[in-house]
Image 1 (cartoon, rainbow, N blue to C red):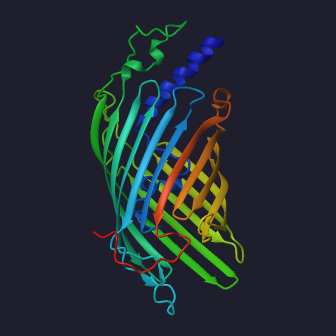
Image 2 (spheres, rainbow, N blue to C red):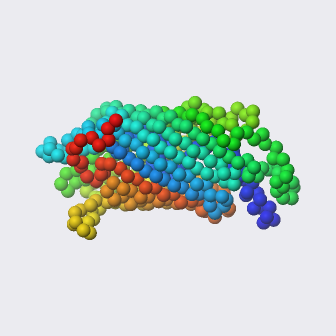
Length: 363
């Protein structure tokens, strides 16, 4: 009985993996992967942003699903600064450029069939200032995607002979291409609101991003099965994140949401992070260096509870999260989902005003 149960789980994970083979990359810390959420977010938060992220899941149940991503984005003509204070000729706020561009790479490998997807994205965004605090951005994304799979290593239900799995039994599947490449396109719009007021004894900050995007607009054909008209369904994304500084404190609340719909599949996520910023003295120079840390949780509907934390020091941020499985597979996973870690670098320093200098990032 125990052996039959294990075989059942193996069949479920392999077949479900094949069915979901056309699904997109997936990270729990979705605010750290703007290229997968909305191309209009390219360059929306910093003049330059570079990050890497890695996720490992389902290691306690089957062959781990491993996903890796790397992103680089920047605003064009970064020398376009605005003065922060009229009486300080050398103090400037972060620039608001009219356009930004980015390149990102994502890759995953899943299951016994070594199912893999590699994707390179080129993103371009344009910013339209509505007022001093409100900006609309529009984004386009063009991608090249490669998919691979080894059908010989997969197990299908037709290969169960009534007593056990028999690899000599024909699977009955009309398997197609095991390695193919196709183009993909996406677009989106985002609204950014930024109210950052600082005075003696008072700190008040509100930042908001709310957007809508579409991916797989061209609905590229999938070639997993012979003579199949299967196409990659368009993915619709509704997202938002908010940073709300608590007046006269170093605390801020960062709620966020993500709603994704792709064919019959859907994902609903809500999360909250509590962020605390503080000053620390350098061990060698005595110069104050501001840092922050955050801790929070998110919930993915009918799937997982995600615990996360990060440390932000100057221009660098290191974050970690862990998925606690809450779906019907809990009996097999015993609640284990998987860890996820990211490292991010931004410029200018989010804690400091920048000095006016010649453009270092210019296209």
